[in-house]
Image (cartoon, rainbow, N blue to C red; front, top):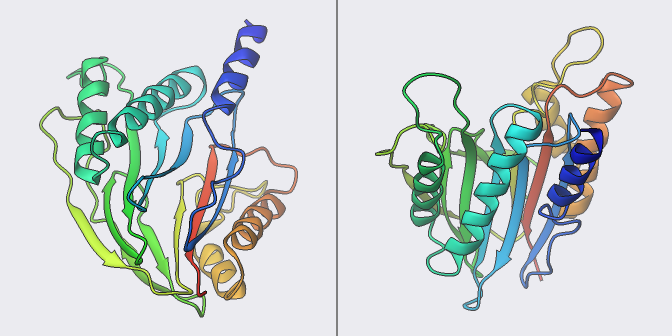
Length: 247
């Protein structure tokens, strides 16, 4: 059983990119730390032939093998969908249909669902985004201040068959960033039972104003790991920063 878990972890690790791709006009940085052998968080970046960038960032419910399976299903469905239609509406609708078909949309008993963010970025900084039961996406200006929280709140994917998600649009100016994190980041608790919280996230973003995407990710992940000290994380932690270049 332990060997199977290790194999599952190795297979899952191949789904989460070790380093983000090089995308003209953007700097990308990402971090993932699982709470158990197999995790449920995922981030994926897919450059499209027309110069746009499709992004999936999300968190499967629960922990361990069940979360890992939902994450793998969501990843595969997203990969296939972006080849046909990468719009956030199409992505979340397809993921919802597949997860419901797989048995997630039950009226009783335990449910497995996927809370996620589907983004489509244009080379000019424009974006379309739909948020499904996930912490909002943060738009951070060049001074490190959060100027917008994107995500109106809705059911996660895999809960209701007839669910629809609002699509929000906007633009990222040169030097600004989009920051995504799983709920495992603000909800991380240290040995004294204290939560990491949103204020620490905002403080790190302000402190790292003007730095590259990878540096901001390193600062956020380093801050939460230092906060936890030797306390194991209770939930998967994922972070992604997408910064529009100034040159």
